[in-house]
Image (cartoon, rainbow, N blue to C red; front, side, top):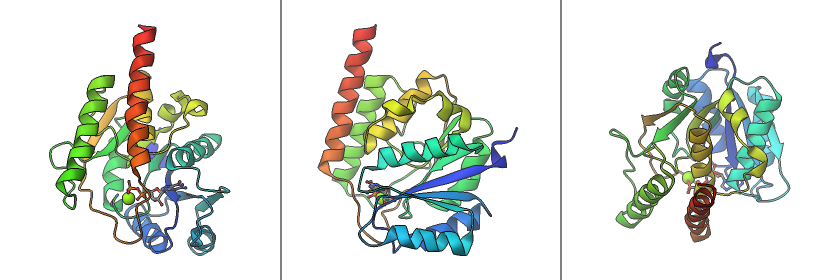
Length: 240
Ligand SMILES: Nc1nc2c(ncn2[C@@H]2O[C@H](COP(=O)(O)OP(=O)(O)O)[C@@H](O)[C@H]2O)c(=O)[nH]1
Ligand SMILES: [Mg+2]
């Protein structure tokens, strides 16, 4: 069965009123009629209400409202559970801020016919982060080298947030036990996919800075990722 039968694009939002309608239009411009799920964490700027009105205007848009800012990772876990409870064939993770260009969606979907997990990758030839200053390149690039080597992951971009999972990959995950927020969540999903024997493919993407609005990433999210990798590694050593 083709994964293209019923994809779902999950978009977590926190204060994205400036971006959300344009994202919906761009997603549909690249994958006509694709269904979407917006997971909003009671954004103070009213993104949740906007998502409801877009759902009426465009159709095929589900909206999940959570009571407070509970983090990107748990928003995706909720989205994955939603997808598994219905008959979606694959699920995209995508930010609402245009760092993840919807133009890559068709190529990622095509790759998902062959791979259980497709990663929109900044760290394979052809991938790039043109807007980043040196310090951000060092933190992200160094973090990737660290995670990849500590955990033995055969993936160049372990912290990427633009991904497509086949349903079978999500079904193999231990979703109940993922309680992570940012980059740690992204690494954990790659880790679980690898351990489950998933075929993982990387599509080079150019990752520009967000167009409008503000980043919610923080030093705490970087620290979470670092301690998460150490804990995972310790767990592996204990069980070997
Ligand atoms: N539901 C939800 N979405 C979030 C949360 N934090 C960030 N997001 C969304 O996740 C995406 C990526 O966040 P962003 O702040 O751009 O992170 P950055 O790209 O690493 O700077 C955007 O669509 C945000 O609106 C959160 O706590 N809950
Ligand atoms: Mg962003």
